[in-house]
Amino acid sequence: MNSKPHIFLDIDGVLALNNEMYVENDKHWYPKFNRYRLNGGAVKILNEICVKVDPIIILSSDWKHHHSIADMNEYFEWCGITHKISDYTASSWGVMFTSFQQLEECRAYEIKQYVREREILNYVAIDDLDLSPWIPNNFVHTPNSNMGIKTSNVREKIIKILTT
Image (cartoon, rainbow, N blue to C red):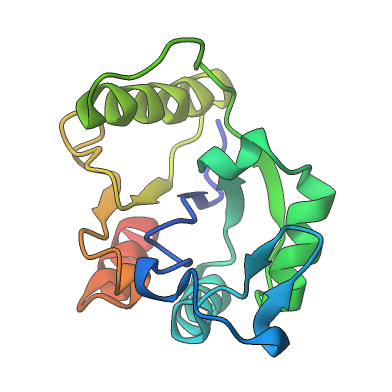
């Protein structure tokens, strides 16, 4: 059994905020990924959570389909994130989703499979998709994709799940 805190992390709508994704500013452009820097306030909150609970970060985001763990960690460091990604959830994709609910269910399934296979006892999934029907007690929703992890009380909910 693994009791070390784990964070299953989505990127878009959590750290990469929708209202900033296409703001043109060369200082914040990361050519290797063809993307902009993650939101500074969101990065600060993730770093605060990491200092408090020292989690293992598992990427559950769709970004896992496009970038290696090494590249993601390089990008995280460039954005100012102090913790590294340790792993990705497996991909259960192979079909075209016809609804957000199918995407949400698939994402939740991938996380639950990872948790089950590694016997993880202490985890939280953070996502702008609503995974609560499938992960009711270990999920924190960031429903406002323009605020992400900066949404009121999200930081506290994540810490509470990982420390109780």
